[in-house]
Every structure is written in C-alpha cells, then in structure tokens.
Image (cartoon, rainbow, N blue to C red):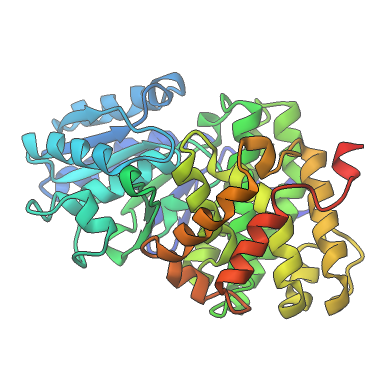
Length: 408
C-alpha cells in the first residue's frame, strides 16, 4: 500500500484552517512556532496541560527551551483531568490573566487542548467564565492564538473548531464550536505517543473511528467527509493492533495519528450525531469513564439503528472491519453484530451494565442527552429522527451485548 512510500521522519504540513506539523520529530517545530509568536508581539503565554504527560513524553523540554530562547514568559496550569471541568478552565484562565497571556499553548490529548481552547476564548472575554461559555450565554468571535501539541491519536481537536468541557453540578458535558478556536499551529509527533498505555491507545483510536462513522452519516455529510471516513477506518483496522502489540512502533503510531487527524477534519465538515450526543451524558455522570470507551459501548446499537437510513455509506466505509456488506437495509443487525465482534477482537467487550449503569439510569441519561446544551444540535443531524424513544432504546440496547460472540 501507499503507506510504504511515506518517510515518517519527514515532517509534513497538513493545512486546513490550522497548520499541523505531522511526523516523527515534529516537536522540534516548536522553535519556529515560538519565533512566529514573538514576531506577532507575543511576550507571555499560558501553558495548559495535564499532571504529568507533558513531562513524561519529553514534549515540555522542547517547549520550555523554545520559549526561553525567544524570551517569551509563561505560566503553567497542569491540573487538567480527563473530562475537564468548568472549574479547571476558570483556574487556567485566572493564571493566564496574571501574566497577561497573549497566546495559549496546550500540551496533551483532547482534554488539555479543549480546556486550553476554552481558556483562550476567556482571556479575550475577562468578564465571562466557563459556565457562561458552555451554557451559550454569549457567542465569542475571538480568542488568543492557540498552539496545540497533541499527545494522543484520537480527538482531532488539533485541527478543528470544537471543544468539550463538563459542568459537574448539572451533569452536563456540552460542546462548543467556533472558528476562533482553530489552532494557529499544531504538532502531531508520533514519537510523543509511544508511552500511551494499551487501554488508552484503544480508547482514543475508537474516538477517531466514531468521529468518521458519524461524520459520514449525518444530514450534513459530504463526499469529503465520507472519503476521509473510509480511509480512517482502513488505517485504524490496519495499524491499531500493531500499536497495541508494540507501543514503540512509530509507523503504526504515525498512521493512527494521521487517521485521527483526518477524522477530526471529517467531522469538522460533516459534524456528529448519536454516538457523541449519547456518550457525553455517560462520562458526565461517571467522569472516570474514558470517552472512547463510552463510545465503543454505544456504537453497535447505533449502527443497528441508523444502518437502514445510511446502508450504502456504512457498508462502504465499514468494509475494512466488516467485509461483505452489500448495502442492503436488511443487514442492519449483521452490521451491528460484526462491529461488536471487531470491538471485542481489539479488546473492548464491556457494555454499560459492566460499567455500573442500570436500566433505571436510562431515563436520566435520555433526559441529559436531550437537555445538555449543544447535544440537541448533534441529535438534529442524525440520519433518522432522534426522538426520546429512539435515544432510550439505544441506551437500553447498549446495556448488554447484541450477540453472544464477545463472551464466548
């Protein structure tokens, strides 16, 4: 295949509305980025990251050196957790205000980057807070420049206009989408991802997979989002098991990272629907639940639900993991079962009941899916009407496996 012709050590520029540096050694581009920031008159930046990965991966060594060489001051907020909260965004913003931060550098996976994007907006709106932002109490049209140094291959947030932050007291996990939060520059260096544990490697990759399954089947899907979807599924199927077996395999990491990147661009164009809209309540109620894990547990039931409306598209894009689909509306259950088997084959067999959800929780989850700010928009883009009964049925069907194959 064409992947064999790619020199993964040659850093490429991937341009959408962001400029993404992709390749082994791309982290060295932070030196050029720092010079660019300085040329824009930026003298202080806010660093937003998690507790340790920015150091463990070695990314911080390059960032700190580049900032110091260009006489750019900085302060670090390193308390972002998975499923970041409004409080964390407000804390990060406060630190940025202390030094009059004129740009924001996020180092991490989707959580630090999304929290950082949110802080980048609030630095331009000092009278607002994260709850105002995520409950749609104002519409921002500017943010300080955003630099994303990506440490996982799943979210695509390094090249899109989306961010997600939780409001814990309401059990809301809303999303925002504004052009002002496209990163100015992003770094996708697979060498920074070799320390990802196998479980996290699985979950972040499943996030990318769900991005394209949804983006290819929304009411706003386009030939472009579908094209990127099919390639994402192929690359995930080919390289995920390689990365699990050998975490240091830079070729596998490179192509999973590329798959995640184009998946982000796919859903930036085609948008999302059921899987993300229904997962957000799961990890809002249980913040310890990995986002990708929640998506995986919902996916088979959603495939079964939407397949009749998008059978030809799904048969095509799923062909690497479910060969033999013809695009007939009547093969919805077969498609769902085969996707569930594939998930089991890569190591994800648990369902909602295994994670502590019960039938009694379905009503609450359904309500959150319909009431959480922004999720209604995603549901409105589903290829079938996303009414209360459909949502409830998907949650119920996701409590247990569709087939017995995973448990055998």
